[in-house]
Image 1 (cartoon, rainbow, N blue to C red):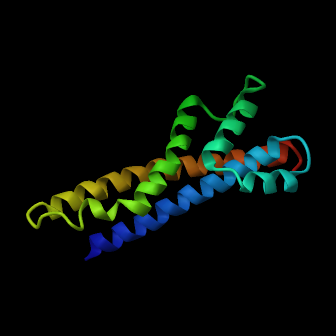
Image 2 (tube, rainbow, N blue to C red):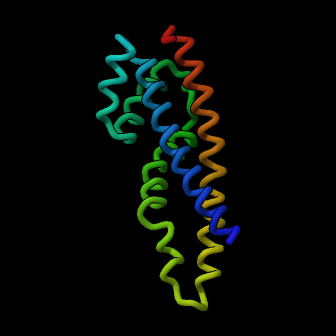
Length: 141
């Protein structure tokens, strides 16, 4: 089934976006922190995305010119939930549905996944751009 293949592909792609966003957020934070970038990165590896976002937001807003908007931070804070849902519940929303509702449940899950994918694709591009700008600005190359 082509739709199943598309669904599987979107799950993988969306998980990739979650992972690369988390990586880039930690790289941005490490780049903005004083001190050695590699040591900062190593310390941040042990932090959750939520912990890293709290640190980054405080640092980002400290000069009154944040790189990320409040709306961006709201979406960034959703990433863990989105990732966990994809890993733990996305297929269960339709695989065990009653036969007469399974197709409708699959279509609803597919539309939701497409929406999440689009939001995260855009955010991933933005975060990657900011990561490159921050690393250049703070001479972290």
